[in-house]
Amino acid sequence: QVQLEESGGGSVQAGGSLRLRCAGATYTTPWFCLGWFRQVPGGDRERVATLMQTGLGKYYADSVKDRFTISLDSTNNTLYLEMNGLKPEDTALYLCAAGPRQFGGDCYPGSDGPYDSWGRGTQVSVSS
Image 1: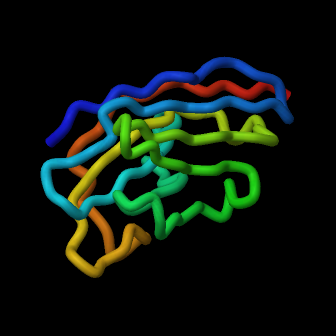
Image 2: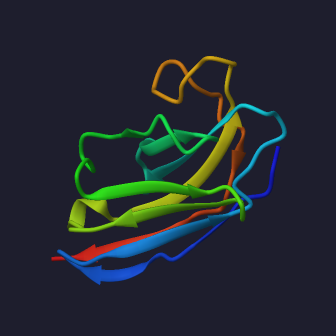
């Protein structure tokens, strides 16, 4: 497991933008997945976006496609989530995660995981 730490959350109005940052974005095996998930109180953890350690093979939830962009600075082991056109329904605790990936595998739902390293999260609140 690795230590992950999120930052960049805050309160914005609908239509606004935020850039989340996850420090320590690496893993203990050569092939791994990184991702952003979000959770609201009493709700299930929802996958937002994931990618491979190469920075390729990006997956986005339908609810954030064309608004959010996941990227990786592998030199500095930092994962980003650029969020534009924010909506009130994007309000949640956003968590960064890392987990192993099989050689030749991808980071899409059903074929990746388990994500066993998690940060504590950064809160995003969007008002209408």
